[in-house]
Image 1 (spheres, rainbow, N blue to C red):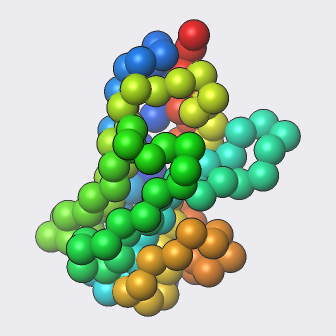
Image 2 (tube, rainbow, N blue to C red):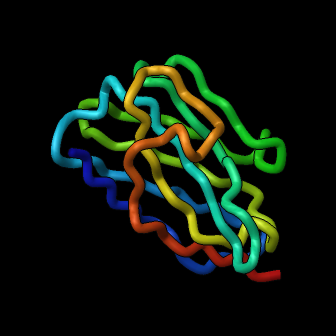
Length: 124
């Protein structure tokens, strides 16, 4: 069993930056692809970014390409999401997820473990 805890969310002005962290516990996640998803009020959950187990391959949703970056530190069992040039439309609850295999995916239903989420609010 894997437990995921997100942190780093908060209120930021448009154009600002935040770094989210996702700390895993229970066992090492070095063999797990990890992903970030977000959900705004009254909207469906949206893929943000994903990284494979080795950290060698990353994927991004179209709305965040060039602004967000995902990276991981397997020694710390932690995955990060660096968010730059934030926009009001980035406001959402951001969730970290772990997949039961090395290869990353942009599909939420292919992830096995989820954190509770962290709120990111971008003011205009």
